[in-house]
Structure formats: structure tokens, C-alpha cells
Amino acid sequence: MFDKLIEILSTWANEILPFIIIPSYEEGVVLRMGKYNKMLKEGIHFKIPFFDNVLTHHTVMTTLSLPAQSLYTIDNQNIVVKGVVKYKIADVKTFLLEVYDAKDAISDMTQSIIKNIITNKTVHQCLHEDIDNMLTKKSRVEIRKWGVDVQQVTLTDLAPIRSFRIINDVATNIID
Image (cartoon, rainbow, N blue to C red; front, top):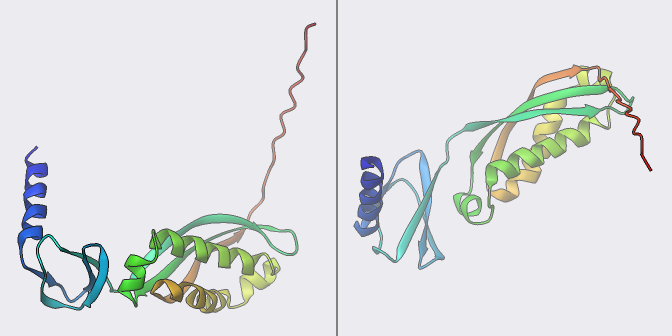
């Protein structure tokens, strides 16, 4: 009960204050009456209460774990891959205002790139070639348009797996 009250008072106080402090690890954008107005770097900045809305986001290096995906190589072998994307925000305006869910977009795009590269290689090539550099280069180009600078894409797990299919044939009797 008191947490909600404190949260409401804090939000209300942030709306009334004519200034905002941006820490050194963040950047922000000012929306004046819902439209983009300007970018904010670290420091203290003045705003018009109730008219300006400030959106901020961390710009320091961060990582995103990619879920495991099961893929078939060009030689019809089933492998499982799992990875990590290391990135930082290069353009906060684009990141905050032009992408709905940036982390989801980064994850989906990187997984798509992994799929495209892995499915065009043999298992031997996947295990012995420098796949990480190929993934990083392609991801960097594709994801840059969202204001994100990809530093490294690393496959943490890449292993052949056996898949078993259990088929259950159930005979149904139809009574007339």
C-alpha cells in the first residue's frame, strides 16, 4: 500500500520539478507535448513541467542471452546453438522512438542471422570455422539501423544433437 503511494508521489514530483538530472551512464530525449524536441546528455537539464516528458535509457555495454535454437545444417545434421550478444546504445533517439521492443528486435534479428549462417554450412564448418566473426559482422550491419552498436556475437553452445520422434498411432473405432 505504502509502496504505491510513494511511487505515485515520486512520479508526481518528477512531473512538477523544472529540471532533470541525467547520470553519466544514460542519455535521454525530451518529448514536448508528445513530439520529439531534443537529445539530453549527462548533467542537469531544465524542462517545462507537465509539457515535457523525458525518456532515458542506459547507454553502457550490456549483454543479451539468446535462447537455444535447434537447426539443421546443410548436410542434414541437427545441432543446437545458443548465444550471447554484447551491445551498447549508440543513438538513444532512434532506440527509444523508432523501435517498439528493441531487446526483442535484437534477439529476433540475431537468431535469424544465426539460422541463415548455420543452415548454409556443414557441421564440420560450424565447429571449425570462425562463425562468431561472421555473426558479429552481419548483426552489426542489420542492427545498426535501430541505434544499437553490436560489439560481439558469441555462440556459447554449438553441439550436434540427436532427435527422436515418437509416433503414436491411435486407432479409433467408429461406431455406426
